[in-house]
Structures are given as C-alpha cells and as structure tokens.
Amino acid sequence: MAGHSKWANIQHRKGRQDAARSKLFSKLSKEITVAAKMGDPDPDKNPRLRLAVKEAKSNSVPKDVIDRAIKKSQAGEGDDYEEIRYEGYGPNGVAVIVEAMTDNRNRTASTVRSTFSKNGGNLGETGSVGFMFERKGEVVYPADAGDADTVFEAAIEAGAEDVESGEDGHIIWCGDTDLNDVSNALETALGESEATRLVWKPTTTTELDLDGMQKLMKLVDALEDDDDVQRVTTNFEASDEVMAQL
Image (tube, rainbow, N blue to C red; front, side, top):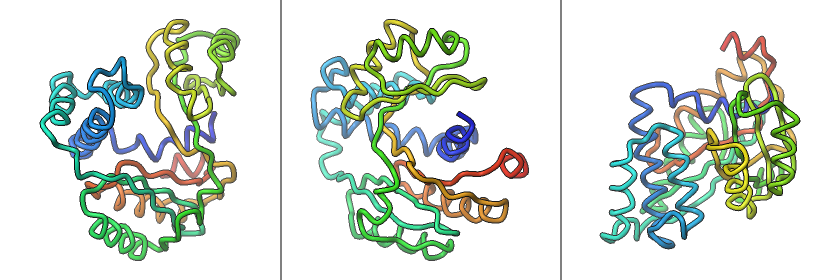
C-alpha cells in the first residue's frame, strides 16, 4: 500500500491546488466528451463514459460541467482528438508513460519531446518502457468502507485479482477489461468508490533519493502542464523519509 500510495501521489498531488484544479477539470471533461463521442452518450450503456464520469465526480467536477461535456460530443466536438501514448525515461532512468489526447499530433509530440529534454529525460520509442508496467483496473475505497477481510471477500467475489489494504484505505486491482464489471459488483457490495480508473501499474520500480525525486517532479509538473497531456505515470519508489522531505 505504502509504495503504491507514493506512486499514486504523483497523479493526485496537483489536484489540491486551485490553478491545477481548473486544468484537471478540463482534462476530465475532454475524456468525457471523447468517451461519449466513441459510444453511447448514456453512461449506463457506455462503460468508458461511465468510468470517465465516475473519475470526474471523484475529483469534485460539478454535474453541469459533466453534462456540458457529454452535450459537446453530440454537437460534433471531440471528432478530431486522437489518443497517443508516449514512453520515455526521466532523470535517474525512471520509466515514464505519458497519455495524451490531441487534435494536433505534431504539436504534442514536439512539446512532449522538448519537455523531456529540458528536464533531464529523453523520449523513447513506443514500447521502450511499457514492458515495465501492466495495464490494470484500479478501484480505490476509503478505510471506513470495511475492514481488510470484508473488502478482500467483496473484491474476490466481484472478480478482482488482488487487494492492498492499509491505514490510507483499500486499493483493489483487476484485469483492465474487467474493470466495469468489477466496479459495478463492488458498488453493490461496498457502496460508491473513491476512484475507479484504468492505470499503468509498475512491475519494476526505480528507487530515488530526495534530489532524484525533485528532478522527477519537475519533469512530471512540466508534462502535466501541457493541455494535451491527460495523465503521467512513472515507476519511482521512494522512502517515507524522502516523501516527507519532498
């Protein structure tokens, strides 16, 4: 749990800041628009849209913003977006996966490449670091959802693969294609989750000291500041002492 929390920390850190919040809202709205465009505008009939709406709600995106994003898809917006994954290495050889959604592939590739270069990293070919991660479904519940045994039983019953429980809460892992079914079953058993999403879960990690973490955070911040970038995942590992100093 501790290791994962530190890794997840990268993705949630900026959500607490106001400036980043509006950027986060627009990224979540973009995902909703594209998900609705690719399937049915009814979340109950479109698993990807349902997960996008759930993720938006867990980040306190207002209902009218969510509704507006779905309506945009019906008005023809979201046609031009394509999803691209970039892979590369950050400072100290940390593996970095960047998921982008763009209407201009050349612009995004150029920005991502220069961001890596300016911050001590380098962009690699597709597949250059992907083998160090697995695509997984992740469902997060607060600690008060139940004790470890209760949550574990509910998760296995729902078809999940693994559970990590700690004082911060419970993280339930499942196959990427099972996420919709597993999260629905968990909702019936445990109530609403804190987060339900597809993630890249590191299978190998790179240990960083304080200096390494500061350099990595600089790269991640710069990547996340790009409007085309939806999510950044890395495989860093750091001790509690380093995280506290950070």
